[in-house]
Amino acid sequence: MSSNLKELIAANARYADDFGEKGGLAIPPARQIAILTCMDARLDPMGLGGLKVGDAHIIRNAGGRASDDAIRSLVISYKLLGTKEWFVIHHTDCGMETFDNDTMRGLLASSLDTASLGPDGWSDAGSGSGSYEADYIEWLTFSDNAQAVVDDVNRIRHHPLVPGRIPIYGYIYDVATGRLVEVPAATEAGKAV
Amino acid sequence: MSSNLKELIAANARYADDFGEKGGLAIPPARQIAILTCMDARLDPMGLGGLKVGDAHIIRNAGGRASDDAIRSLVISYKLLGTKEWFVIHHTDCGMETFDNDTMRGLLASSLDTASLGPDGWSDAGSGSGSYEADYIEWLTFSDNAQAVVDDVNRIRHHPLVPGRIPIYGYIYDVATGRLVEVPAATEAGKAV
Image (cartoon, rainbow over all chains, first blue to last red; front, side):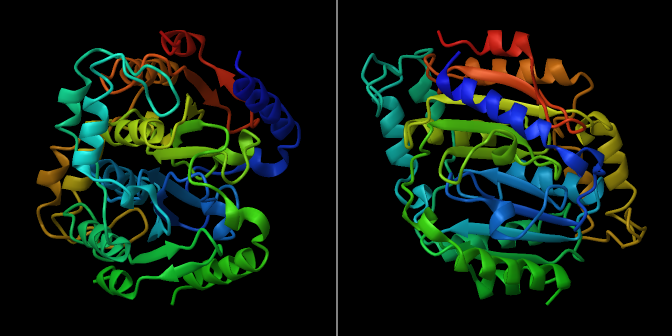
């Protein structure tokens, strides 16, 4: 058992011992909020928004992008569990601004098909078909973060399964200060109709 | 400005005022962990695992499923940001066990194309093409949660872009007790090769 796994399981035992009233929460988010944001380790979506366990659905992927899967989750969040306001929150210093599809495809092509080393000295040798697979994945990177928030809000706003009555707010979280900064064009695009 | 939005922004200002050393964190997750889990409001992935801001990538969607988008995020997590251990964490009392593709398509067909009411009395009337779109979405529901964890770990383990050296652990979080319960068949399937 790795030290990470040991520590995580031990921490979970302490968490459960002090679980208190959290055990009685209902499935629907108490504050009827859903947040789409990035998987970045520096983001604590509950903490940065003052949310408690049970308050909000939180959907996270690389970049906080409005992928098909994020939209699948948002539609379930609304339709089955009644969320009424959605937030798209990107953040400063995002890894998704540092590369593009070609970079990613190149990185994978140069490692997965061979015994060459990954960033940490590991061999990436896998099934041998890695680089081909990589060419068919849209990595959803971006160069203009504010525009990417606008694009994500627009995609959600205009998706045929998203009711016009749900407001969608667009923000960028500053990882250096902890502050949410509104992207007005995104909030404008996300207005309930 | 809605009360939810007002409260969230006010809470964020307090969070930023007390931001402390979190502003200096590096992009790569300090503990080289990535967690794939559900968007459920009752889950606090950092809290339940004793993780601090900066420790781990956290990817969340409806069900904590190994969707194409979750795999996009995991591959970026490893390849660009060096995570070395991955967790797939589902939870008890998951909404994804309560419906299937037909339920979801029926719900959407009966609402989005008409002025009928959603669960909260709203009209879902949207673009008018909602029900058609819904027929082409795989909602990734499941009836056997432990098997779904095994399936998700297996899909990640055998994906051509996932290095064999990354261990993948499978757990179910008990929302009534706060405890993580291992799914041994999933952890077995997720063993590094």
